[in-house]
Length: 222
Image 1 (cartoon, rainbow, N blue to C red):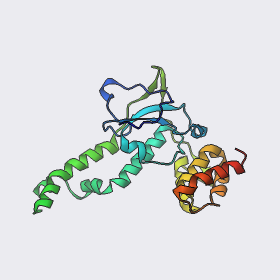
Image 2 (tube, one colour):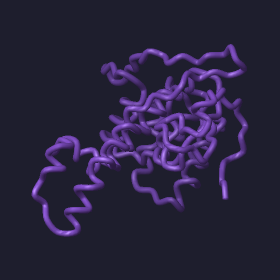
Image 3 (tube, rainbow, N blue to C red):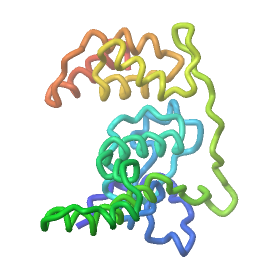
């Protein structure tokens, strides 16, 4: 049974030969996702909201929402896939297809590994390298990938906002989901203020995170 969210954004045009494909990785799609996921996240997105097809894994592997474009969100998904499937991807670093086939691994478990390892690697490699089709809405509204814009914080120029977000989370021991939600509300111009607010709540659980988020919004008059 499908558990897609309500499609509230314009659906991108899907070429016939991609009609069953996830835009992010090329796997069979079984979901439609809105980007940005929350209305308030539009504060930092540099293009109009859209809806696009996704597989279940790509739709849920990244929880944060502070991304300036669908392309930045796609890159974060690829990074998360690489981290999650590191062992599978390492097959290609440790073996060649021929070396694996000619290896002298013995036993039923090793024989199974020899048969399945390379196809698993090739499948994951294809997903990571996959580039979705051009994003078009209503035939003529092409959203082109934007060049990365430098984002400066504390005198350091980051290649993109996402890099600065990652740095801030690690440096100030921030709760990632809380920080990115608050940043999505305040906008990137108030990056420092977002850090100051979120540093007050370093240890959160899933049960109290929502209450803290609402408390922060109330404290700044939202």
